[in-house]
Image (tube, rainbow, N blue to C red; front, side, top):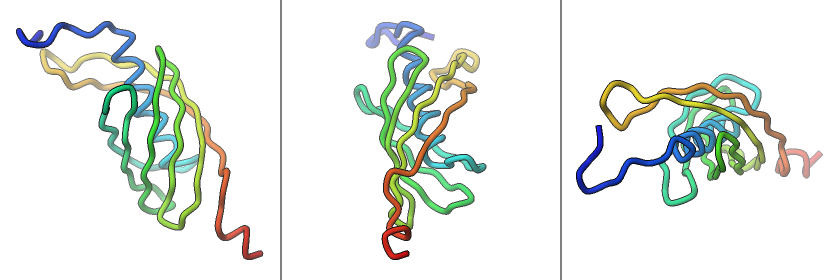
Amino acid sequence: MTNAFQPPRPRSTHAARLAACLCAGALLAGCSAGVGVGIPIGPFSIGVGVGTGGVNAGISTGVGPVGVGVGVNQRGAVSAGAGVGTSTPIGNSNARVGVGVGTSTTIYDPDRMHR
């Protein structure tokens, strides 16, 4: 459904945002299970989630189906990651559902500094 005040977005924009959200989710959850929400703000997506490692926050961006981002968990460990995904609209709404895969790595861990 198209709003009269907003032109329809190209599919690549939806895929980029989904990939960015998925990437944020991958950063938030690392290689473990978790759930998160990403909110698109311009070319970026701000994400918050909860995983087996606790509460996390991140920022990501994407082009086409590929997304990259950086996240930090409640202990202060910082991760960087990349992912790829796709999505489809849910009915006639602006909501979308999708799937994707990603990987991340810890680039700073305050616990490692004390060992």
